Length: 394
Image (tube, rainbow, N blue to C red; front, side, top):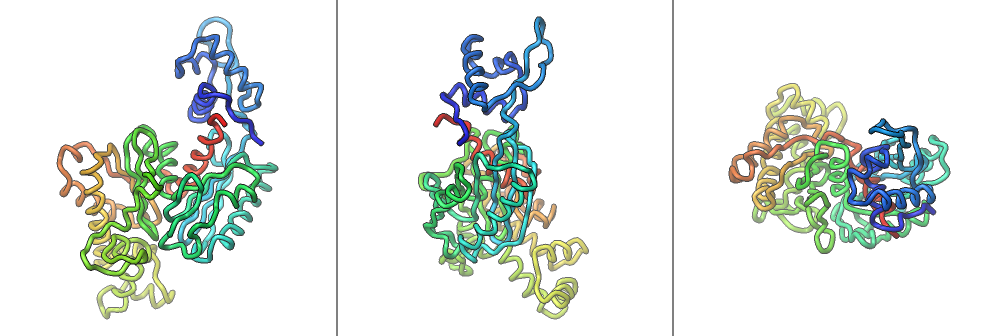
């Protein structure tokens, strides 16, 4: 069992070393409000626990050179990002540098038992490749609402068989380490905040557009989950009164009109219309089915119908984001998820809608940008979440 810091001072020091890398005691003193003697006591205690080690001589600041300190390089965290159609599993060190990363196709509708058999096999493969014998903590993201304290999915619309499954408890027993579970988009927001485009942002939105559409809300540097963990479920905001049926049981939701499934549905209908999109029709004839990548490729050739599908989806998504911007007034909006492969046509459509609908005071200096981390945002965020837990007092 990994040692835990004894108090908030030690926790703060661990977080600094995780985020900034090796630091001298003097440099640590620049970041914490502790006397030199108190700082020495707390760092010595961290050295005794093995959570921190000495790591070479620090640069001179005048006088005798001291040793750098760093979080123990033997610590390993597991990040798991379960999507509707794929899963990413990664192992990081204590500074959240990705040491190994696997991605595989997966159908979340097969249920938690089958999915976690695959996840555990991938985790074992990473562990063996890195010649380590344990994980010190694991973070898991799932594509649906999660009751965060218990780590239990609650009525997730695209995850039949998952309602009430004790993910946190079951995986903690299997892995033999602490486990935390959250909605996948919250973890993507955390990942982007840790080492992506949102590094300097305190108040921002991370919008994931994949099979489903969700939003991670970061307020004052902290993920806002809401009272029950369902904050940010924007895919089920209504965009059309009495519109198309949605998987959640309601009608007219954003996800009924855009997202992976809706885009493939509409692209297939376009391809089957004679003469409407020769490019999509040819791809459908060749493979028997279409994917969002086919739509992106068709748009890349200048196919008008494919471009229209992307623009329409971006406009509806932008309509919802515009409402969020007017309500929340974020400093940054990050667009991530699988459908960002649709490229700048999608981003331009979202930007146009947001800048037109929201007031200038909210959008005058508001960047709307694509994720820097792409497919690793979720696993980095998962390890950030579990390291926050492990690096906090027991």
